[in-house]
Structure formats: structure tokens, C-alpha cells
Length: 580
Image 1 (cartoon, rainbow, N blue to C red):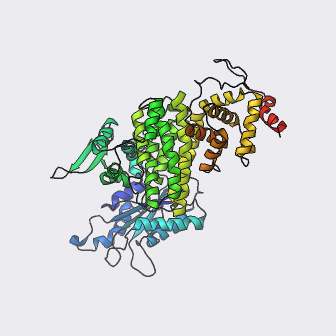
Image 2 (cartoon, rainbow, N blue to C red; image 1 turned 45 degrees about the vertical axis):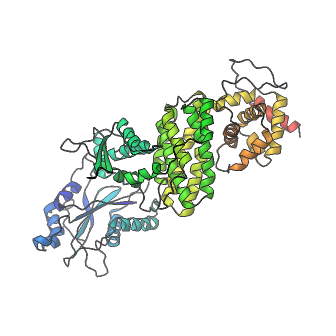
Image 3 (tube, rainbow, N blue to C red; image 1 turned 135 degrees about the vertical axis):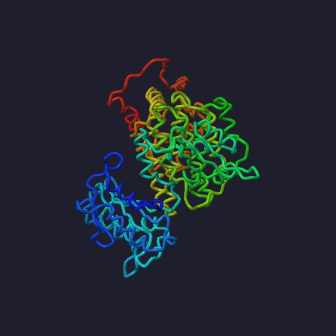
């Protein structure tokens, strides 16, 4: 249940006319009062002889009783209280009780003999009510409505439990401002999927990802097609900025500008500057090596570099101090924004949704200690500069590798937030992880399919040897891995690592021990990407010759392999059982 306290207004009659009217799109049905300060206020929806003016004059009476100079200009208090879409439909009596509890909790009408304001609750839809009040108490004073929004939210959490409704995770005041109902209706009229505020927030986040200076940040905003207004001090110093969509206009035909801080708390100019002020202008040796091997600035190099940076960040989030962990978590948001911006079509939607969900998880009251997140911010920068990925070949496989690593980092983030009691952030990280699962399935299908076929073509003696090696290296996980479809892809990777001069048993033990595997859908898939990253094997194996050992059958390049029958699919397991 979400109470949404709106800015104070000046015309009671105007708000009542809207609430009792048909709505912008005839969405208001059967408008009527469910409760009021005296329980018998005139209801235009139920009494044809009652007018909106009657109700307006009754509500405004304490205001009008004051001397003209003493009347508050903004005297109309308004909040909507909306149930979750999955909640049952509440009765008028239940909504009346909710309205009385909200006005008491917010100080509008505290009860217990204390003077309160006049108010009325209007219902014109199944899932919500609107509460209108005038901000002068019966004895002519201003009500104690300080932090009425937070107080309404706290009361809503209690109401949810008592009525058995969907329970919203409590917030901590660090969430981005929700679009208003007016903004949502405007987006519907314009045929937009999202409001202008939400589109601008995403564009600004993407512009921040990996940026190193004011100039680069504003160049990215302009390249995204946004209109920009800068606030400059008389000294010439830049103090702030506003952005607008060119086609989002007000009633006068002028663009509607939003300050960065009104898009999200961490998008004000001082906060975004914190990110690059601590950055060093250097690239890690790991990333330089990737650029040499795969090509400077290529999408594949950027994604492999991202996988390496993310792999290290998991341990930091799990074991470092709060400020350092918070910096890495904020930088994960930049990685997701950059990855979504440069992703191929078949992963774009899920990665964008993951970035949008994780945005809430990237902020908390734990202040980030910037500078420690340099590797992740550099990875985000490399993703942007590497450009769009094709979604196939090496960059497609490297994308799957990066997403796989990101899943574990975001899972670690969810646990970190849960330990801190950050319920909304933990829930947001969990939602982001689910979108990453879907993106991973789309990105990994082709490269894992290639590895699967390579594994299927390994000789029986080779598969038997790989099975024995797996049981010796990972005795507790071996049977689970052998039962997974990804076993053949892992067997091919083990063979490839051995051919490259690595000790496959030591490598397998090492990558399995470094991070938890309990949240993995497929342990074999995870081990494939960890081994390929650690052993510096190409993410995409489709261009490599078959592993050449004396035990292997000769393979002809360019031939296709028919899907194996269920009986043949068990070959590896049968041979391994015979070897016991």
C-alpha cells in the first residue's frame, strides 16, 4: 500500500472537481466519499442535492475564518493511498478506516481530543482513495504535519500487516522520486512506455557510467539527445544542471526541465562529480593485456575486462568495510547501465530491466568511499568506449561470461543490503538478479552450445578421464555436475585448459573454491566461465580446432553433429561408472 503525499495546493474546489470528475481518460468511476472529518460531509456522489461547492466551503471554513493576511496561500493537503495490484478489493468501510488512520498518523487529524483539520476521503476506483484536507485546525493553527509522507508510509506498513495485504519493504528516504499521477497520465497521452522523468533518469545514469569529467558527462547527455541547462555562479563555476526531453512540453509549449537531484539523489552535480574526482587516469595491466589479445577497444575486450573486475569485486563486497562496499555497489549500477547501453538486441531488454531494478539497490545511507571502485568504473568506461556488441562470436560469449560474474556480484549485494536491514535495496538487487538470469540464458545459448558439441565429440577414454578428474577435484559437486546438461561444455573446457598447459585439477579446484555456487542454476556453466576467464581461454571456442590428443577421434571442421539420443547422452556417465 503506497501513500503518496502531493505538494500543497491553493484551490480546494479545483482538486474536488478533478476527484469527482471523469478523470483524464474516463478512468474515474462512481466517485463518492468513504469518510470525512465529521462523518456527515456533503457527498456530491451520493446526494444529488449536494454540490462540490458545499463540500469545498465546509472544508475551507477554518481557513476563511482567519484574517486575510493570516491565511496560508498553500492550504490544501492531498494524498492518494493506493493498494497493490495483487491485493483484494477493499470495501468502502475498510478504506474509511484506512483514511482515518492516515490522517491521524500524519497529524492532519490526530484525534484524542486534539484539534484537527477538516478532511474528506474520495474513492473513484477499486484500488485507491484520495484524501483532501485544509491545513488550518479548528482552533486556527497550523497542524503538526512535519514529515507527513514518512509518517503515512509507516502507518501503511502497519495497515498492510493487519489487513493481510501485500507488504511493501520499508524505505530509508534514498529512493528516487516516483512519477506523479499527472506525469503518468501525460506519458499515456503521448504514447510513452515510461514517464519523461523515468526516461531522463535512465539517460543520465548511462551518461554517468564511467565518465571522468564534467565535459565528458555533458557531451554524453547531448549525444543522447537531451536538452541541457547549466546553472553557473557569477564566478563562472558550474553549480548544477537540468535536463529535458525535446518532445516533453508543458502547456506553453516549452520543454519540461528536471534538475539532476530531482531525478535521483545521486544524480545531482556534486554527487556525480564524486565518482570521477577519485578516479586515477590509468588502465590496469589486466585490461591492457585483454586489449592486446582481443583488440584495443573491442566489445569482447571490454566484456572480459568487466568479468575480471566483477570477479574481484565480489570478494570486496563480502569482506570490506561498509564505505568501500557501498562504492563498489554504486559502481555495479554503472556496469549494468553501460552493459545495457551496448548490448545486442536479444539481451537488451533484460539487461535494461536489470539496470533499472538495480538503480534502487545502488543507494543507501552508507556513504560510498570513492576511489576504491576504480576498477569497476574503468570497466564501465571500457564497455561504453568498446561500443555495441554483435551478440555472437567472441563478444557474445564474453557477454555471457560478464553477465554470469555479475549475477554473483549482485547476489552478494543483496546479501549485504539484507545484513544492513536495507529491505528495499535487497529486494531490488534480487529483482535485478532475476533479469540477469534471463539475459544470461539468451547470451549463453550459442557459445555453450558450441562447447557442448565439442564435449560430445570427445572420445570415451577422454570423457572417462575427465570424469575421474572431476570426482577427485570436486567430490561434493561431481555427481550434480555430471547430471547437468552443461557437463559436456565443462569437459571440453577442461580439455582445452589442459591443452593450453594448465593443471586442470588444480584449476578446477581453485575456481570452485573462490566463490559460492549455491545460487547457481547450473554449476557446470559457472565453472566453464570461471575456468575460461582464469585460464585466459577464448570465451568463444567456435573458431578453435578440436582438442588434438591421441585419445580423440578425428573431427572434420564444418560438419554438424546430430543431437544424441537419450541412450547415447548417458555415455559419459556409463563409462565413468565402469571406471569405479
